[in-house]
Image (cartoon, rainbow, N blue to C red; front, side, top):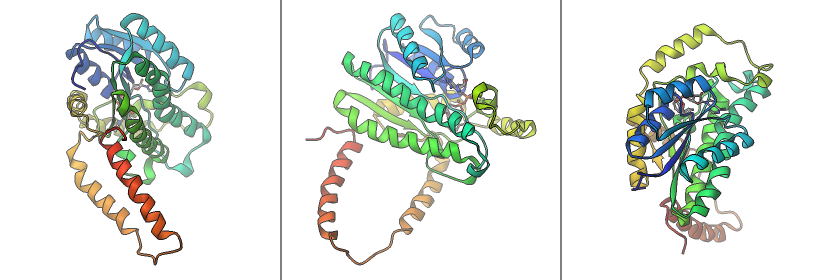
Length: 299
Ligand SMILES: NC(=O)c1ccc[n+]([C@@H]2O[C@H](COP(=O)([O-])OP(=O)(O)OC[C@H]3O[C@@H](n4cnc5c(N)ncnc54)[C@H](O)[C@@H]3O)[C@@H](O)[C@H]2O)c1
């Protein structure tokens, strides 16, 4: 992506944290920006802070297909076709899977996974039809690569967002639409207050909010990376058409350790029937996947 100016961007979760940082950076590049968020007062505050006629707010629950479709109509009516899509809204629950309820699953999956799915299903066909190329950035997390017991549902959604992004990158390359996955570590954001916006219908299965824990989380997020720093790294990656966006370099060693552990789980089994043919088949597939990861067209 080289030509940001004049394009229209749709940023979910745009009223706070990473999304607000992205909105600011995109406005500075001369884009029109839709701040799509579930918290109307936060949208208002964000618009006041940005103070830019090329920014508009749109209230949306990303887990609702109808809401996202309505938001797309509203934004395109004002700014024209959206060719920069940031599926960034996210919520977190710091609890293990066995402590969680189906309501917990429905809420976190709804926002963190169905949100990006709804964004892609709504906007990508429009982008393709418009024929102006474009870019999709999906916000996953380092929790999309590193799993532990503390937030199992969140891990599940963020691993899935990586899968969605990898496949989409391959299939959209022929349309001149780039795709990246953003995997931040700790961000200076408001995510610790996610419980505030849990839908009424999914509250029955919620554990009582532990306000002392939330307070501690707020303190930890204070030394998170500034959204502006992340946004600059996102735009740089888009210019380079780089798939993974890792704004936090401190994770490199840990990833190497984990990938090492994955490889260490392989065993050298003796060849079983069909092995040689499979190896042959995988050779062709591997070459094709390699090309697709680089965003190259299949020949
Ligand atoms: N905060 C971190 O340390 C961290 C680390 C890695 C990844 N992330 C990811 O970054 C993304 C942005 O989060 P953030 O840290 O800036 O948090 P944040 O809470 O500051 O901002 C998220 C925004 O999403 C909005 N939102 C929540 N549910 C929504 C819904 N259903 N529909 C529309 N908007 C909704 C919120 O109102 C909020 O404005 C998320 O996907 C999050 O998982 C955050």
